[in-house]
Length: 412
Ligand code: ADP
Ligand code: ASP
Ligand code: MG
Image 1 (tube, protein in one colour):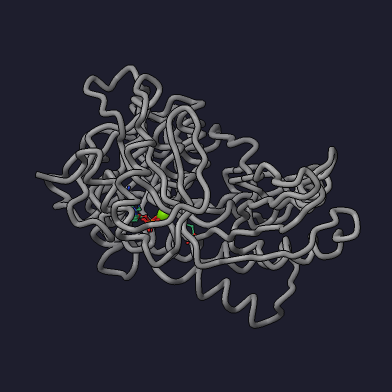
Image 2 (cartoon, helix red, strand yellow; image 1 turned 180 degrees about the horizontal axis):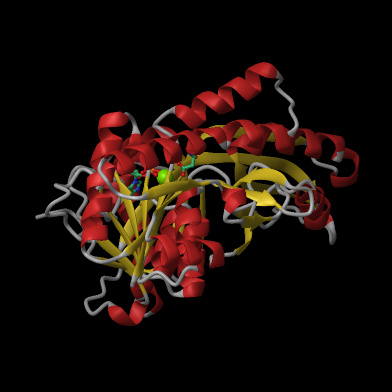
């Protein structure tokens, strides 16, 4: 029988009624003749609560125990959905990550999937025709036998990786929106739903802030060529819409120059003033940050005026801001900067589209449009299929809406 992976996010399993609704979606696909693996997230808000408890227990805590705590949210929903399915007369059982097993690295809290062994589940499908209800977000680090979690939003990745492992026909990611939009529909009501998005564009959109899919899930879908749909669990289970297909670029006929706009508030800006302008200085700044696993994104070095000193500005994730500052402070003697200035009230707004490869001046139009709205650009980065600007956080919505209209993405 063909196989299917269906994934339901937190809002879709927020209470028992919603879990019943999920079961109706699952039943539809079982009736259509699929062997189904359902991946579930924790109930809405649960993971935040569990994370909060770990922090309350101790601000600095053992990441392995953090994983033991936060993985529990998905254990609950997997059992509950199996119970509901059984009550509807559908054979079902829950699977925890370690039972499959989903083997991961030991980067507790943000582990990477190394291998998913689908053989046991396939045998169960064959022998028992039983729906597999899988706890998303979790796996295990085999050498130590410890439970691991895949980072926030990680159930998307569990689902796509499982789809690849069991050779599913497709992976359906059910959420609280009916597809991938040209930008976050919560901040731009005129955002429009895309029928198809290429893996590459989705990868950029996710990594630049569109949290509808975890970045890793798109990577896995792209590498294993898993056709992945984003669709709504709130559609009528009897007649749902297909949602947005994430697929290879070649399958997309009509291509816009810009496909989507994303934004990320998880940014902090650091400027080092009057740094010595001599060889080795950039290394003395960025090596210690790299060694501390701090991701530096945008970097601007100003051409020095007096050829003795220069200013260097760069961004780091907001969550790493304090750590980055203290590392720079402890390396001050080696870097020789005069002052460190920082800001966390910044946002990175990005435009993404494979059409940028063949069109010149796409970013330039944005700079003009933003300046006409009085929005000052602090930093810019560009690459083949996207560009990003760093601006004051207060202008987030205005900037996203401005770019959304500029590139003709507003819904008619
Ligand atoms: P789930 O709990 O189902 O995993 P998430 O909250 O992780 O759901 O992701 C869905 C949310 O992603 C939507 O409610 C929406 O606000 C947000 N989002 C951000 N950017 C986009 C986009 N471009 N298209 C669709 N949704 C987006
Ligand atoms: N429950 C986890 C989280 O909130 C994983 C997920 O929902 O994808 O991050
Ligand atoms: Mg999510």
